[in-house]
Length: 90
Ligand code: FES
Image (tube, rainbow, N blue to C red; front, top):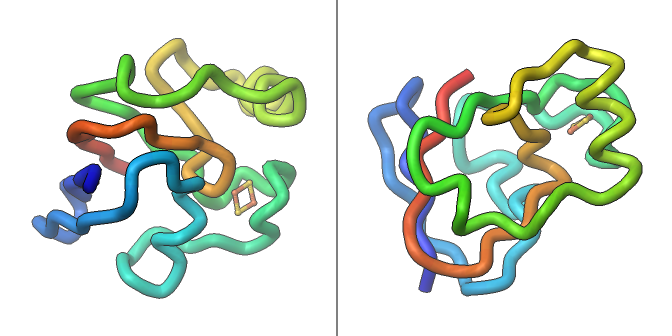
């Protein structure tokens, strides 16, 4: 199992390795509106463990560019966790 620590909620959630992190919808305070990598509502800063995420898809990259996101920012609805632990904050 992989683990996602959400700073805003002071909460750690276990998810199966290889999960797309839209699986966290409804389990944390982060709002998932479109779940298609378009609206940016789930944009987070990955404070630790970004190497534990698969690289962003073309769709995610385009939206990140549109929002002027930094290198350590990802869309939680699109990001896929390989395993291990990440720490995210919104
Ligand atoms: S929920 Fe819209 S981009 Fe993630």
